[in-house]
Image 1 (cartoon, rainbow, N blue to C red):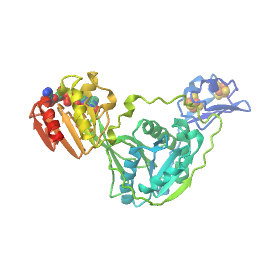
Image 2 (tube, rainbow, N blue to C red; image 1 turned 45 degrees about the horizontal axis):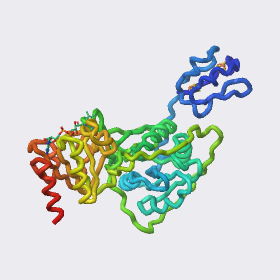
Image 3 (cartoon, rainbow, N blue to C red; image 1 turned 180 degrees about the vertical axis):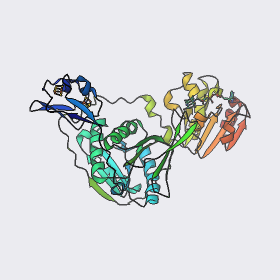
Image 4 (cartoon, helix red, strand yellow; image 1 turned 30 degrees about the vertical axis):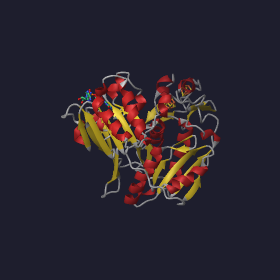
Length: 393
Ligand SMILES: Cc1cc2nc3c(=O)[nH]c(=O)nc-3n(C[C@H](O)[C@H](O)[C@H](O)COP(=O)(O)OP(=O)(O)OC[C@H]3O[C@@H](n4cnc5c(N)ncnc54)[C@H](O)[C@@H]3O)c2cc1C
Ligand code: SF4
Ligand code: SF4
């Protein structure tokens, strides 16, 4: 859908300019002109007192799919640190690129971050597109969308992957709308169809009760946000080289409407469950908030961190940042201790890919034992002290 001004009817009253929620209309020679930031919302059509604006159906042009090449990974960085999810995406992107028979590229935005490109090459990127500009210091929707959209328009990748972090979930849809293409959010599995080389994007739907596999047959790039902690990290090869491509970054007045006043790091954000190698997680079976102290003792002894189920978060025993599961964090540690956790599907979806799962539960029929590598039937308040005793020896 496009928006068109009927010049002969426009009286230049500027009512549409004032009412456009996206500041997309300007006046030229007393006639309204619709700019590139128009989203087609239709507000101006109703607002114009002279019926001088109308919505017109655009003829759909078939996209030349063959013009799009390469798998792109959005290399999300914060304060000069590449996020773990970007390394997971490079690992997954490499597999996809190999199956399609194309190259793996990373897109890096920030300020004074060109040095990070070497790390991305070492993690498998063949090319790194870098947008280095003071305006890109902190993530801002409009700035990052503009730069990456322009790069996509020029270099035409066929697949674009972003981490389903707060930033990726914000940026992905903005890019997809700009590119007029499809986006599958929060994917947990990506694979290439061997027949047509298109990407099959699978994500949990309906509270995790259904896995939906989604394709984007006629538009490019095919875009996905991918859940952090699900894919295997890329392998680091010291000294591996690639091609660095600098992106032209130019912002005009009005391009960036957001201003970052302050970035506040909540204590909760310091919890890095996705990086933890050992997680001692507690469920309602701990019976009370203080139960986490016992779990913390075990976690500290093993050099790990504690986590929990949603039920404990809902009970107000622990902060949401510790929650593992479908509506919490997905984790993949070396060892996951599930203590007093029943093993609901919504919890399992966030931890079942852990290397080893050790379950401690009073009820031998608890579903958690179906995914556990080692199961101990017993009261966690009796079992954990025994484990601690043994570890001390
Ligand atoms: C849309 C939706 C999203 C959800 N998202 C999540 C999510 O992200 N993460 C999540 O965890 N849940 C999520 N849930 C909730 C989920 O369905 C379960 O309700 C929750 O995981 C149960 O938590 P639990 O295992 O701690 O508690 P319970 O199911 O109450 O299990 C407690 C377990 O502890 C055992 N136990 C009791 N006392 C002891 C003891 N002394 N020693 C040893 N074992 C003992 C019991 O036998 C039982 O198996 C979601 C639900 C919905 C509907
Ligand atoms: S509201 Fe209508 S008449 Fe007024 S400037 Fe806009 S298009 Fe022209
Ligand atoms: S359709 Fe919406 S965004 Fe586009 S010019 Fe009209 S009011 Fe603005």
